[in-house]
Length: 117
Length: 109
Image (cartoon, rainbow over all chains, first blue to last red; front, side, top):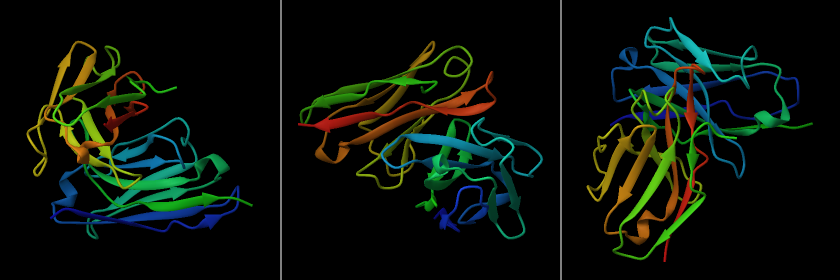
């Protein structure tokens, strides 16, 4: 069974930094693209970033470009999102997802990031 | 404003067939497979369709299709448990980004 467990979400001040983690199991992690998708309170889904199976290719949304960095450790079956220069509009539930040819086929339960002074 | 356009709300009665649409352009839906995601009562999203494939455990009352730059999710024999928000998504070549629709709230009357 595919499992994705996010962690690291906390309350942080504007301008601060945070690293989210996603622990994956139940599939061959090092053969899949992985994504982060977020959802602000009361809003829709917003794609954040993706990383290729080997970490060689990353893409991110314009809203986070230059501030968020995606990485992975295939030896630990883990995905990471380093978030710097956080803004209040980054407040959201962050989901880790397993990639397919059309987006995502499995989702974690999410970890909540709150950016507030 | 979302790159993909979905109806804000759709409703139907139990047993009815409803179709949700997702409109894009040649750089996204016109070029790539579309995924559909169900979110019930602010729980975690669940994939209910990727491309034209049903994930394991999703009832075959759901079906997906695409024509040009419009994708559709059809739910036949609507059930109360189908009441949820539904999002479409695909890759956009011009943006080099995954794009989502704004979501459709499906109400089962």
